[in-house]
Image 1 (cartoon, rainbow, N blue to C red):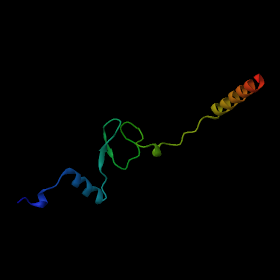
Image 2: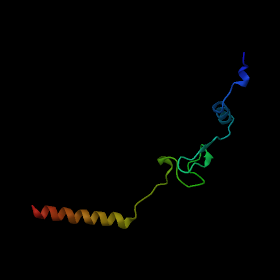
Image 3: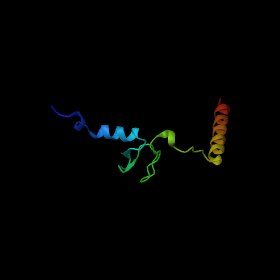
Image 4: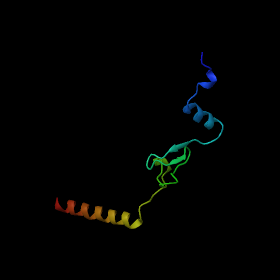
Length: 82
């Protein structure tokens, strides 16, 4: 009869390490390098792991103003043609 103490696998070891407060390392989904499980960004390739961790990106003001002017011109052109 096998001893239960000798019957373990790597998943049990990873779970035990995570319970002890130590971080588990996982491969990056983009480059495959090892990174900490709780890390929002891969230290090797710099990609963010989830969209929630992406920094807020705002369009430059000139892009917004140009888009609004183009919409006003297009709307004026359509309404004048009717």
